[in-house]
Every structure is written in structure tokens, then in C-alpha cells.
Length: 116
Image (cartoon, rainbow, N blue to C red; front, side, top):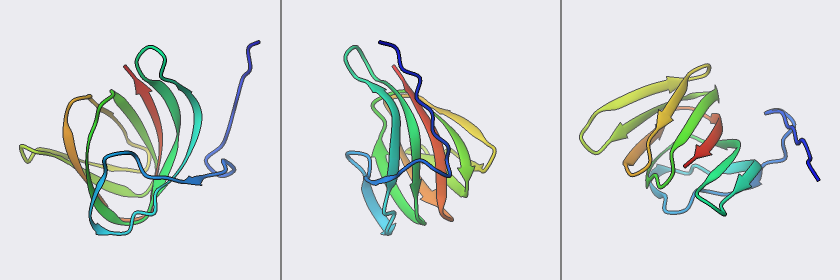
């Protein structure tokens, strides 16, 4: 049976969670998220909402991820020092296999999509 699921950033019931393997350097991100769809049977596919409070974190990305920033600002920095700044209304593609440090300057909310 096929089911269409929907959610809005305002009404999605967020659960307390932080992505696996995250190192917190400062602040308390208190990660919260909602998974709208996930299928890990043959690679990684999924989408949902994630939000956190101001903090600085590092993690290794093991899947390709696209994000659309709904609220807030963040700096995403790679190990070589290159970085991008994202804010509400921006989209970014994050390729799997890199380690990045995220500085969440304000409360941050994104819609994420995993695609392997």
C-alpha cells in the first residue's frame, strides 16, 4: 500500500536526538528531529526536519545530504579550512565522506534529504 506522508516545520512533532558520531565542542545543541521518510535497505535515503540550539559540533558525513535552511544561521567548515555560511532560505549539498565542523550561531532549523 502506498501512503503519502506530509508534515510542516511548525507542526512536526520533534523528538530529542543528535546524529550519531557528533562531537560537541561548545554550547548545548539539544538536537531535535523528525524523520518524514527513511529507507536504509539499499544505501541511505530519507528526509526530515532537524533543529538545534547555538553550539559548535563536528561530525563525519557518511551519506550525501542536501539541506534547506528554514531558520537561523550556521557556518560549515571543512578540515582544510574552506567553509560556507548558510542562513534561512539557503540550500547546500554536503557530499559523503567528509568531516565538517558546524557553528550554529542561532537556533537552527533545516529540512534534510539523504541520498546515496
